[in-house]
Length: 489
Figure 1 (cartoon, one colour):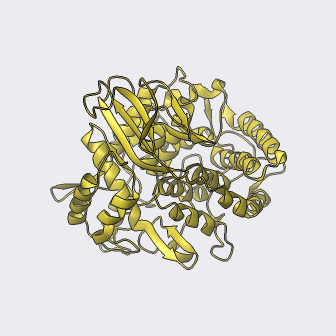
Figure 2 (cartoon, rainbow, N blue to C red):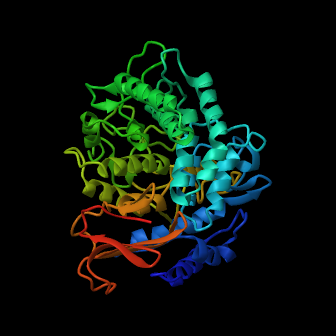
Figure 3 (tube, rainbow, N blue to C red):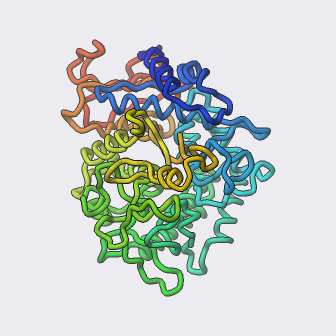
């Protein structure tokens, strides 16, 4: 039973198609976008017109990146070919984000084929070029598809992948090192070294492998790595997780947004919650167009149209925003610390939605690109390239850039949908008195049709007030906003 029809999907696709300059085409061209998304994408409505528009825009943009290869379907980061990509123009840097989005398509084969692609040595030799938590991503996919056979099939390859990360990046004391470039965060203030990014990721890999393989040794290794990461990278004076230099083990002198990565992968002790106070600080990471990648109070914070196209010394990066807000949602679904609130999550997500625009030649259109000026909203890498040469190839390199999540944060964060074993639950992070309604529909989890409805007083949908979780068209759980509701299959 569908609660929302495809009319809105078709309307938005027609408009986006009319505004689009379709430069690069793979499996699903613009002319087929409405038909594909009407069949495959979840549906969402809420009172906020921007969030509703960008929800549809991000699905419309994301389907452009699906490409069929001899090894199954993959998802591209850049639409035009770029020199640092691997076979079929694939790059593993955003793969975890892409998999978190793709798992919500009704055709679960898209996410599963892409997951298998990265674990197939015949398909790809660059699975470890950039930091990528493959085992964690496999669990994320299986949590929605319910396909435990995939996990079993990939278990040996995932273990081998983790062993190779340890061989190439682990220091004798157990910590991991990575360059900022191969964290996908080039030109950062803190630079390369013993970073919270790769250490959180590899700790998460150990825990994930424990769940996938059933080997307690991985779980214990995860505990040891987490203790080591926390003891080494938490700077008590700064109240933040910070990079250490490899040579002398001193801390870098800057708080950077990637310091929130531990919460993306791990359950963290409340004693570290105070780090989140910097998220909403206007001298910290909070800016009009999003979350800056370094604190604005730092003397080397910079927004520049000179030099390297892509810099992580201040600009907003949707990749980093996705990590941070997914991490924050994980924390808020466990507890509400004094340092950050559900309203902070909601406002940050709304700011993220409102950043998805480009104004050019008197026209404003929905847009996603590489990095962004946090104070004006202009797309920096695009502007740098155009200033050098408006004809620079490839044309519009960053247009429709698939380097981040959006729909997944609406589904798992704002709507709070979660799957665990034989149950599904919902704990929306929507603060009280913000909206009168929302409806998430067309969600397929473990072969079941799931919908989540919020209707403050029951007048919007005439199916009762409050929060209601539907499974296969039937009401399965209900309760007031601000509580967790759950049901078994």
